Image (cartoon, rainbow, N blue to C red; front, side, top):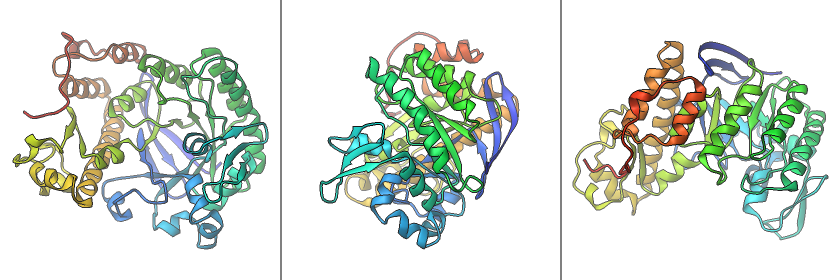
Length: 402
């Protein structure tokens, strides 16, 4: 095991911790931006350090295709290759094959898919996924799991969960750098509490360095989403990090943190930036809207980031549809927002004012008191009283023109 996880503060299920990895000491809860090809689109690594990014996620599938894991290994590993001194996490590559490629076929051997280069069938096995990730050299590597959308029901969900458990043993056996890289297992089981429970117990028996909750953020209802997170965090070990995969909406991160999760990743903050949308405490701000054309205010007057200190909404509005600089500035701002949210979650738990932080967060996002019912239900389970935030129900206008 190549990590140390020390809980520094709690509020009911929520925890703030120090996660010490080979390349960096991180504070949780934390959000990890996705750097598909070893880069966060439009941002340099020194900018990511500047905004407080702790871990970057790399996609094994994309890196294995180009520049190849062999070349990355030859050049000293991904940290050196991309000039990133802090922590890295790589996924297993399985999700991309199922989601991006046609005719992906999952059998006991592994994932068979069409090569994007020449269309020939290729096979990714648990062993090969780990070998590729060992060469890439990230601080945290993910087991290859059998990925199924949560919206699918029936025997396929059960088959995928049991196969995920069988594959974890093959991943553990193939892992050649356990003292330098931490292998996390992934809890599967769809929306079925019985299957999720079997998978959690099976993974915990393997005594892994950390655990991920997979198969969510794929189209299921928010009510189903939070209940799976609540069930899994309650059953996973207290002394190991818990990672909810694919979660990037600020509201979801606050709810999952209240339920006892520690780590999150998603393309959302940078992808939405490329579409001209900024994250703000009230929700989102659409910079492409014509009302922004002569608005001389910063994106968020309360934000201390370089973008909000130096540029107006009008300027960014002018750029977003015509110049790459627009999406770069918005990506910087959005990731700054996510890093600040992570820090605020951590600090509020340490300072024993987490419920106050949650209420302030919800009051800004839902000033009319129309907090979604699923959030109210999740917070009740998390033991956080948000009655002061809830009032009459009406729609919130996420285009902030006031």
